[in-house]
Length: 123
View 1: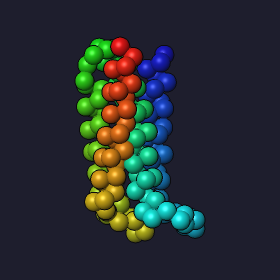
View 2: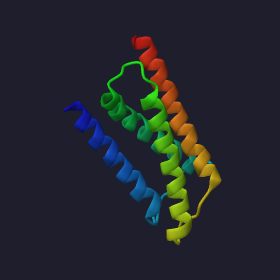
View 3: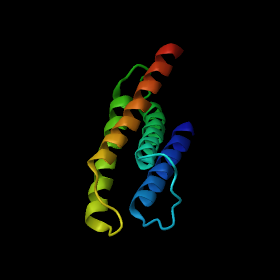
View 4: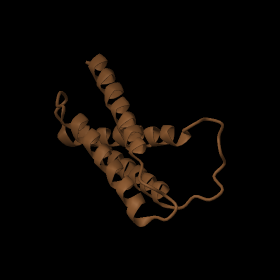
């Protein structure tokens, strides 16, 4: 049951990120933080990696396996790259940006590090 819940949470978050990254957003208020979109990208991929990790941890069932960390991280990175390519190819209002990919990787890396620390201390 827990595996299904984690799957649907991760899948739903993936859909939200995909939609928000590909639709044209008009009249988005500007915030006084420079490069705030990079923080948003990092947050999106932090949560993405975190949720997919929870699902994969239930999927693999081996408590000490590195697979959920590696797979959730790579899934996040490749998903982020695919979105950037899609923005450049299929949208008019968005453009591909390498710094967005770096922000995505930063968010995914932070998620893996925090999860790794948490589960090490839990043992």
